[in-house]
Image 1 (cartoon, rainbow, N blue to C red):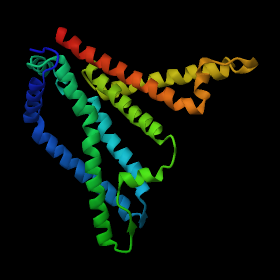
Image 2 (image 1 turned 90 degrees about the vertical axis):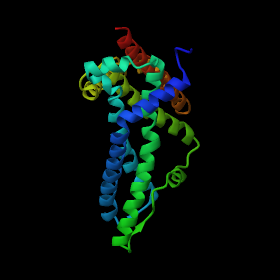
Image 3 (image 1 turned 180 degrees about the vertical axis):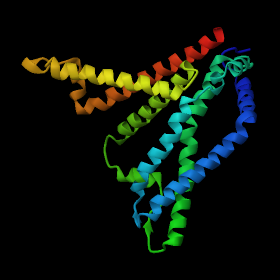
Image 4 (image 1 turned 120 degrees about the horizontal axis):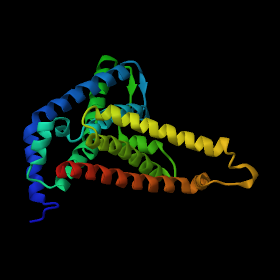
Length: 258
């Protein structure tokens, strides 16, 4: 038997987790649908002329507000000592448990939440037009939004944005494996401190050390080429994503060994 990953064993894990949290998940999705609809109703009632592109900020903010904290509380059994012990005793490999959480906590929200947003936006649009027939409101359509973007590097830019969202989720996901209590807050503090250090480093390099004076060019000058910057960014994001997942995996493995 394959002790690393077995599809039948993985399917049993999915069924077991669904039996435990299926009803609560359905109620949570219904609550999100209602919450989205109420927020978007406020938007449609207060604006009589809405174009398709104007839905984009709500799409990003609402979905991000759900997806990011959701990733930060992966492996919920790790919040409790007894549940941690029970979870580690499940007849599944570390790879299967890790893959399940990656799929559910990082990728699944971006499959479900846009669908919920789509229905919520259309409900809000129909209700608004019913109460205000003189309003001009274009329904939310991702295809219409993409048509507004006319750039040769659109695919590269979109890839960089998607990877950045995945990295942010993955960092919070990793925090859930490292911290037992308040993983979201603790991870955000560490991320904030790291960003502050990086900004200070570049400030020292560029301003205080005056590296550009007298013809000196620092290593960060590779990003001054606009044509290659996007590719460097995507490459760094892929490396960061792989590194983050590897660290999270070994943190889960560490718990099983301990």
